[in-house]
Length: 172
Image 1: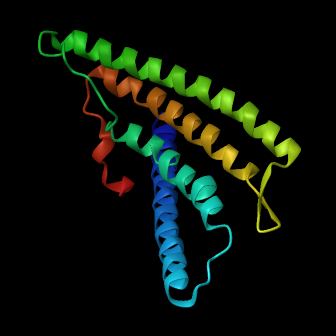
Image 2 (image 1 turned 180 degrees about the vertical axis):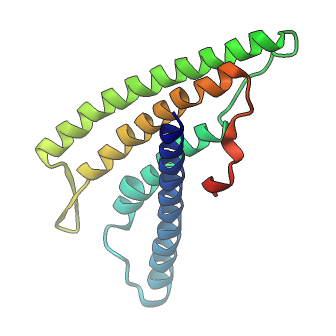
Image 3 (image 1 turned 45 degrees about the vertical axis):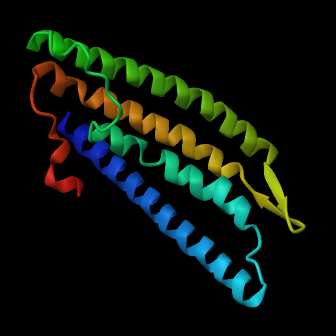
């Protein structure tokens, strides 16, 4: 279990770093496009397609596992004040398991769509250039699958009532 814990931790952090890199590349790309258009009246080809089909997908979904790992998803704790410690643990375990099931269903559904897009070689035309977009369809199942693994891995910590090791120094 410790090996799975370390592996899911490193995968979540790695994908969050890739998401960060996507943000940085998007900022540089869009800034360069705006500067070139304003000064030289030249635009970088396929900027809109790259931003919408690559950067935003990376920005929105790759850090999903990391956010789950840090337990920073939106949570409603309306009844926790009246629940005992045991009921809170049971609730946390059930929510984590339910989240894992939902993420797994999403991963399976999006994997099918990704394979379909890969098979047909999905692309968009940008200035008479066919830009492949099928690779971005694989970001979704990867992000959802990692989030599902993270939810399952944290169940033993939640069941024991142990502090979740989300602030471990090796994840920074």
